[in-house]
Length: 428
Image 1: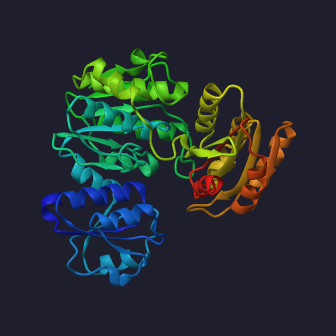
Image 2: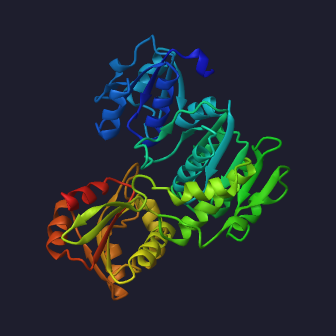
Image 3: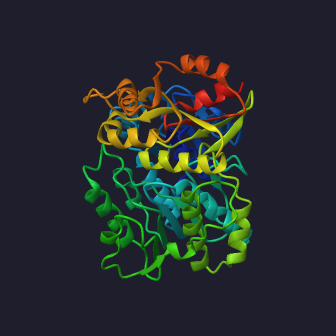
């Protein structure tokens, strides 16, 4: 199937960050688009304003025989009502990345992959291409601060996408340029060990088209198995690392993200002047150390970090920005399997904050088989003499926090689940 074959598309789980971006692309291409999600949100409201017919109940009757393709997220179970109905009607069904590949592989494709930093790097690269006047199309796994959107409709042959490794989904892509920001053992519910993660990234690197390039940090950990024997060009983005580069976002990790984006820009023929100008004005993305506001002098930030490496990097950046303030992290771990497998690393990372407040683990797609819990995280932190407290509800942590706020405080609300609601509760 090609995009030109489609007149009407339906998205199951359209409120997701990737799905909503793809739905926007289909609307821009003149397709009739509908979608469903159990949880109406600002994203689904925006989609409705942009022309998407939205269903807030995910039921079989949403699927009609005049739909050409049903796009779904892998979070949907096989027996989901809409998917069952689509199969019964013989409608073509594509998961998100298959649908993305169907569209993006027709372009000169720049894919940004990696265990951490791919959202920020993707957004940086979009800004650089805009600054250079190259007018790319793009899909990013967050909302860009400057546009409040996760999709950019361009008129050139460039397409920039964020490529997620979960369940090897990024193998639907055949990029011309592949950035791999870094590699660690992540998505532990799918990948049994680091070797499996490396193998997936290697397979993606082997799919880079002739004349293309793989961009990595040669001094980074865990990359040797990916680079070995590749027939395309290989570029070290470490050569473009500049700790004095002007960025609005703190932290060495963001300087590394910027270096990766600059490397891809240079390969595309963009001048370093254009790249650095764009980066100096880069305003970030939704939930990536996103400043939400002040409350009684306290600075409130919202962050998507849900891996120990991300937590440590964000806290280090916060220390750089606020060396004389006390940092409180309000944390919600994401999935039981990740929390259990990386438990010691989580305790170590959270210990970098002055005060730690931990909420119940966001289960997502999982059942708790290990018995890991937020209270066990707190117990382990206390054993390291850290100021840590467990809370069972959002209201409880907000009620305790707000009366303590002063100009000495920085509060980072962190996690990949619904904890973002806490950040909003703290500023209103």
